Image (cartoon, rainbow, N blue to C red):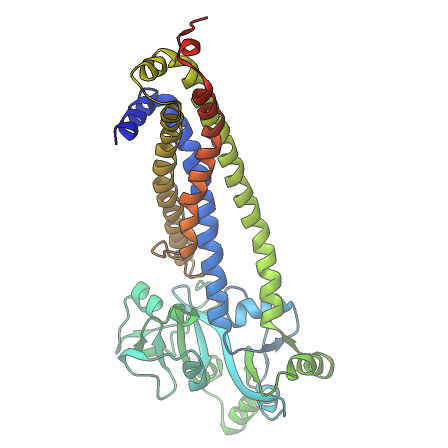
Length: 399
């Protein structure tokens, strides 16, 4: 305890130098913590939302855009496809289930998705308030959508054309909120879910006669279909069948998300590299500070030797000083990483994007203090060896 107290006093005797070293260590550790939190949560979100979905079928275009718009609701849909062709997919011998989705409208930035009860069952969604829709023009709100809009069961709202929420409002066909979903931690939290019939009713001409109505029903479309395979072999043959024999395209979520994570990983690698450069700079700064401390404290170190302090105690004094920096930087670095995560999560929440939280503690974060200690010990090693080898006469030399 005396050694720890003495080393802390020595550290505080040079506040500017200590603050600079602490800042560099904190920035490095904070950057690495942020990358760890963001990367882990993004990967978990993708895995959670894609669970059980083997293929996404929609209009031809970019496969990644199809995945981002149809599963994660983060991009503009590639277009619509005929409902009749999507229904035909369910008859394919390699297909176990088809869940259609009709997109294109939104409410206060939250996307309105027309679908079937199978979508609710797939994500194991349940109503926390009210009930699931039972007839057209009823809708249920995800937990995040309900909290942001303030709607509750019994409320009414009007959807807007377009996913940005700035398009023309469908004032003649308002929705009634039948329920609010319990938080699921998945993409449904930021959606407004209703039946396919509701979406068609909003966009179809209501003054048409019986013949026109039948014609419109025959021309109905959906945006995407989420497909679950019956056999693993379908992963090889089904997308090829769709892409080559129909006017639609089939995208593999596993392939596209792997490609997306590699693209995102480049940015993460850059930020991680910046963090390690900052740690290297901090280590060098700590090394220089402790090396100079040995020269500046010759009289103090000599006095300790004359009072009976062994050489190992002098070396431990310098290492302990570096460990104080590591301890403080570990705490501040973890706090800084979580603070950056809170800022990023707030910005993404405003845009109804991926849910990222700062209130997540990962087992991997235990390596942050270990990394700080390693940098501190390595930086203090050479000055500590110098103090260990010096004798009292050398320390008293004031040349």
